[in-house]
Image 1: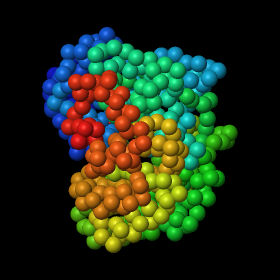
Image 2: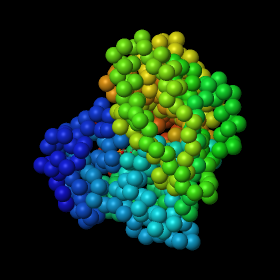
Image 3: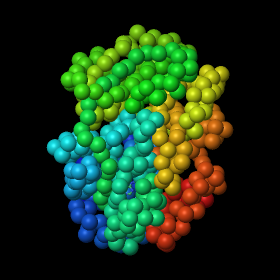
Image 4: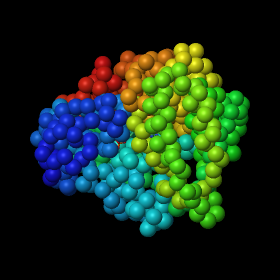
Length: 436
Ligand SMILES: Cc1cc2nc3c(=O)[nH]c(=O)nc-3n(C[C@H](O)[C@H](O)[C@H](O)COP(=O)(O)OP(=O)(O)OC[C@H]3O[C@@H](n4cnc5c(N)ncnc54)[C@H](O)[C@@H]3O)c2cc1C
């Protein structure tokens, strides 16, 4: 086992026992930070700790990972365990980062069915919060889980699938690290595929009028709406057999441009609408073709904090229009665009997409600006439309409100209580979500 108390190799550990998330907003001082190298060590750590949390890549915006107990990283438990060629399934060590999955899956001609904006997350971390991409016929990543191995609070391992420990399987595919540590995950993949990406600037009015049609014509579609410019960047991805077609790296890079504009908008709020409108000059229509694992992720170096809610799909555009109009009325100091995507319904008890096709709306704020100011403006709109929050992003709901949104809430809580009678996995944030 690596005890990282004196090891600063992990970028999220910035002093001996100080942890912070990607945006820097969530911080805590774990008593110890450990990176077990096998499941025997993991079991020993869990048995010896009164309080534990497990961290993936620390890319959640909500304080899911914060603990003053033991913080466990599975960074040493990575790679392919086994695969089934006929079924296109692969069993992967839970600490594997999505960005390393290409190297694992390419040689066996498999690929994830969908991915989100970035690929820095660990597989287990992404699964545990219902991380998703876009596509009206595509689930969040947890919806592609066929089975997993879970190490529980007493250090024992359970195999869970539709046919083994079925109720734990139903509960555990989105469980915020509250049932134990996922050590291996079996994914339903598809054969490796190429995607054609098309990006163009589109008037917001066209998005509001046509997006519901476009979502049926594209495997993946999403838009990034600039609130003060009435424009959006529209991005579609569709399977293709065309040859790989790459683009020269733009100068300045999208990310450098985003940082620059965010700084200008922060320092001189009056310029924000003009800077947003000017962006049209930089966003040229582009097309490229590459393997799915290359096309899906974008570089996100400009730090931000984020709130995201999943809205019933049929009311998504109405909600988007209201969020944009409200932010405008408040002259909200936000440069970052809103993101609008689609996700298919699933049957996972704590999935925000439980029995509900959804439109996903995200609001981002530059990390050097107060995010609460704009989140306070938009969150009541999301509630009005019956939205469920992304577990890994910021929201203010607690148990009283959450249980009304999830028909299988009590079933989940029963399993959680059985698997963790001493609340070993519960930190203050989970206490307010589950017990508050
Ligand atoms: C720049 C950026 C872009 C993003 N883009 C998207 C996007 O496109 N779509 C989307 O849906 N989300 C997105 N997110 C959110 C992100 O995908 C989720 O918050 C995800 O859970 C983070 O994964 P992680 O590995 O960093 O997990 P962490 O944030 O470290 O942990 C998340 C949860 O998983 C639990 N966990 C981690 N490992 C295990 C394990 N082995 N066993 C059990 N529980 C475990 C943790 O305890 C915690 O509760 C983005 C976040 C950032 C910062």
